[in-house]
Length: 169
Image (cartoon, rainbow, N blue to C red):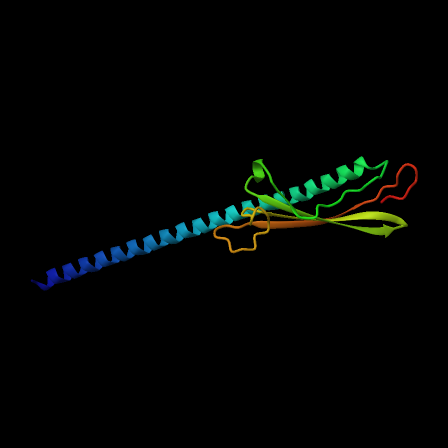
């Protein structure tokens, strides 16, 4: 074989190696872009689920607030009784937009005195999650996959003077 032919085969071999290297690099780049896109999609999904969990937790607060105010308003004149918080946390699953979430609501009632009037103080805590443990949130066990949890709490006071001038209870 002549030197010219050897040089030609060597150049051709280097060209094939360079082409293979470019193909491998482009394949690695495509794989990296695919992984980044998958991570971005997962993060976007987590953001959306986080927003839904927050809405579910807020719905739990609204639900408990309605229960308190409905009972208090019903007893406004007679004031025979005030709302009593359940002794255990109450869980609720919502339909529709929040279908993937369970909401667990706790209510603690105390009383305070302000301007010689007794005030009912309700502390409401609402926790929403998409993978409840034994039908309630939060789930403190190790969870596989995407676990989303949001908690919201508020204080609510109720004090009304009855029409006959009696102090509210």
